[in-house]
Length: 412
View 1 (tube, rainbow, N blue to C red):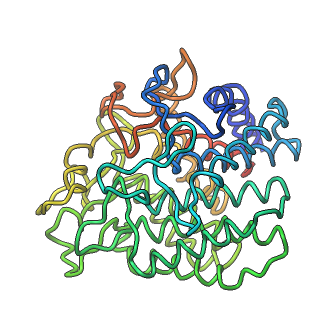
View 2: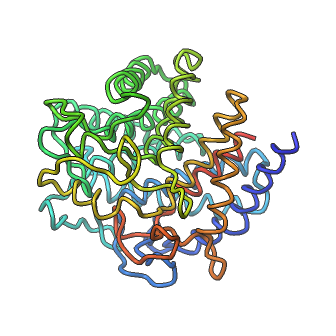
């Protein structure tokens, strides 16, 4: 009980006093959405562009905060302010990001004009943008109990699944290497489907087909992508698991994030107890193999046998990414670890999860917080020194930390 109260108060206070005020100041009251093309330190705007990816994520955060304020859990944030920011972000997404064909534009300017992605020469450069837009819309409708325009997220959901089934999609900023299947697709679908189901349930709608879709993705990950206690990020057609860099590498942060996606889905729509031992092992293995014994913290990528990723490389951009950034310390795997370890400690009672949480917690709060202006300096070198570089999109991200802090508050 004492631990429960400590975690609850700690993360609630961080949300109320630091993270929400920081990001609320970045909302665009004129055109809607959030302006988060800012540097890693957090004090310089790089551009006025807006990525649909970030708009959907920010809308989800606002929707969750609104619900917690309504329940009396969050007390020191203005409900009306959050509501206004939520409506502005929702309108920006619906009016600008989603086309009549229910396909999302990847990048827009400040006012909402579509921008062609220069790398792919397409507007629809990433299916992840569609998924994040959808989870934001789903949370909006659920939080405001607003049934108007429900056809938009429902149609977007159908469009996403159809395009993935037909292999008619892109995945910028990380293209899928030729000849490979990737973990990130069933992973994002587990979470996207879960949020869609929760939205539809709030309005008494049938969710049988969505539950079946989600369980199929869960089984794909746990039965096909999981091997020897680790989730594989890439599976080659020839299954050359021993020799190739892409086949051998592990992403500890993705494993930690996906284990709670899967667990929460199974808690509601499957049999978590059947998979709990397997999922628990995946979590502890990811922390063990990902932990930097010299400097602390979690590596971005590791070999399945530990340490620097190794194996034969091809010519894909992703292999370059692995080799060049494997030892970086990024914000999001660490915030995912905080929630995942507390979640599994609560579900299993296994003290090893609490032990690993305390290790991560100590590292995180001495490494990442920006004590001068708030939030975290999100991107770090292996030794923890801040690094001004790009990770995925050219933005400072409003999502992972706040989402994980919100999940911990809900957990307790």
